[in-house]
Length: 405
Image 1 (tube, rainbow, N blue to C red):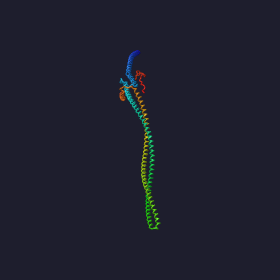
Image 2: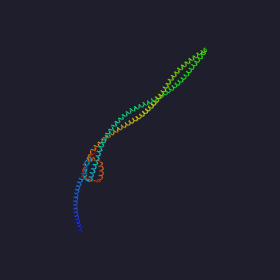
Image 3: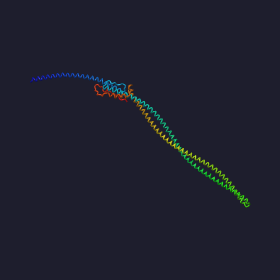
Image 4: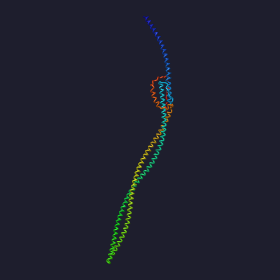
């Protein structure tokens, strides 16, 4: 039993030693394999780092240099992608950005030149307009002063026309009263003429009575002569009666002559007074016409004065508007001058960017139209592996300069 146990133990120990030898051999093999694998991994890592530095860091450095040139305002050198990977796509995107910036800067430069030219023309035009506006304002002031003097003259004329109208009305009234007086004189003279005619008729009757009395006295003297001594006294009376009749006839003749002369004078006076009456009627008519004309002149002067006052108000309003326009034109000139200065600053700012001759003539919208289409062709950016050991230090990383003022 012990022998069996001993043999079994010996066999077990032999198996264990054999297993240990096999394990040692396997361990040596594994160590060898691990060493070889480690060496291969190191070689593979070195190769990967070399190719990574060559395929990634160099394009990144070129992209950095291109970005620094763009940030410095140099847009003349194109950026060429050397591969189609993510870095190449990044470089291609930088080229699209450079072309878009070149087109935009070219457009901005042309627009700035146009703005500066337009601002210069606007400034010159505003200056000319300001000078013309000032001249117009001076002319309006002179016109306003002239209109004030003319208004004063028209006011004096209107006052004179009113006074003349009053005097014409007064003269018309006086002439009317004179006409009435002349017509009264004519009526009186006509009455005198009628009375003179009646007196002449009465004198004729008296003359007839004297003539008949003279005849009766002659008849009485004849009869007294026939009577002789008895009719002597009657003859004396008849002689006296005849003498009285003759004197009455002579007086009647003288009175008749005087009455006829007075009647002739009255007739002449009546004719003159009638002529004076007609003349006064004509004078009254003329004075009424003059009064009407003076009234029309006064009314026209009043309307003219109202129109001139309205023109004065319009000129004053135009003067105020012209002054406001002059102020606005001055402000516009100052704004145009400021805009010209800003345009000059913009031109100076854009002049810091250097463009290629072929790209400076291209509009910016070409690059802007190409950029979205080409960016859509780029695949989505995958996460780039980190190579901390092979990346440059922070001090050598891309650093953009401060933006241009």
